[in-house]
Image (cartoon, rainbow, N blue to C red; front, side, top):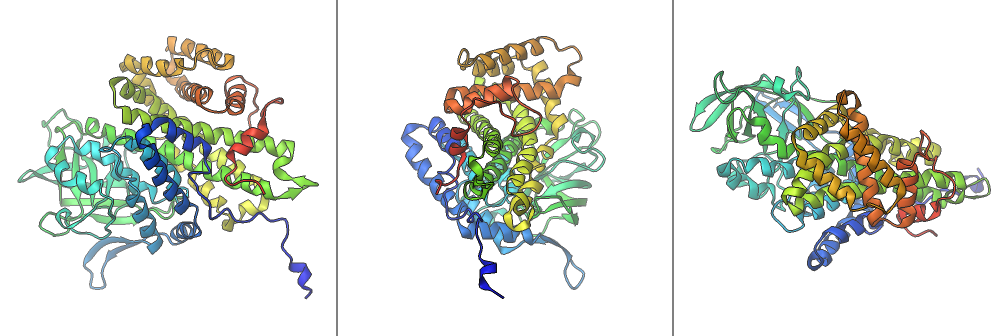
Length: 551
């Protein structure tokens, strides 16, 4: 066979060996904006090292291997003894170890910790998204545990450690630990007040749990926050929050009966399990009895921010792959990225990615500030961001895949994995309706939250007439709350878009802000991506999103 028939031409080179952090202008600028000047050089160096690792061939191989080799449940050993263990591919452990070492579970106790961690989370999960789940839950468990100081004294140093130590052992024997949570049950789902798991006092401050948890992610974590009901008449009648260790202080295994692993659409490397507590499962109370939901509210808020950040990471990687491919691929007599219609598609994708990154980092900065105003801002901004950013992830991943054509539909491209991952963050930690209803609760109960968000938006007043008009329309909607539940999704969408527009007008290049306001706020947009209006500087938008310089 003639060798010439096998000459490969007109294929984009792999996007490998690049700095995921430094190649993301929106992210690097956000880090510079929010990290104190005296700490910026240190943060930049840490994130650059992580970015180079994330873009390396080694990390990309780890991600592919972990995804291709899903976890395996072992309920019993060969002799019939209960094991209740899950084994993971070595690359899963390598990814987790690098994430822990990079401080992705350590934000609450260091200056600028949340911005630095959020940026690192956005960078590192682009190598593989599934292992982000235990990183996120471990990070989020810290504020919940602080409601019970004696437990926090034991567990917080382990959860914020830079050491990843897999395997089940008592807390006192470990240099680092991971945390998970088991909130939902089959009969209740997001309605955790419908939980039926029971907790009975078992002496020495412990409780014995009986019940079934429908979703328990990362079941090989060292401890879990769970909800259960104490006996009738105790507390306020609501569920109570408990810390459930996999290994008890005396070194014996806690009863943690793994029933099965979920066969999920995406997030294949991460184990999500059903687990049963049989009446001998021991746990320790966190916070007040009957006040479990308030006890975990900060944990839930933190994991919701991570959902938005993880969605931004999927979008960024999808856009990077699409722009990279179209920079090298030629068709119909020219480079794809130079074709006006493809440039429109790529620019529209880039706008979604940049707006998502800008909003995610703004949320992290609010955590770092920690003032009453910033915490009030989070109460409204988090559900709006979680609702909108996570919902935009799936159409962005699908359109980016299409930019690669048939090549994108093939597993080797990595694009199908991104597409399967894309819907996850819209579902986990409360789906779209839950976020929209949470936003309504904040509107009704916390007027300071409304004031804080409007103050943030007001900082961009007068900078763009389309943004000003969108703010006016938003105020009109907020002033009329009759039948508001029917409009809750629309309200969450508009609030998120106005927040994104205000951030881009203040901080992004003019070409980005102009295109965003014209399309998302000004109504000059179609119903599909790639329908930006004529007259915008789309080349500048695409060039800004390019992960490596054009050849």
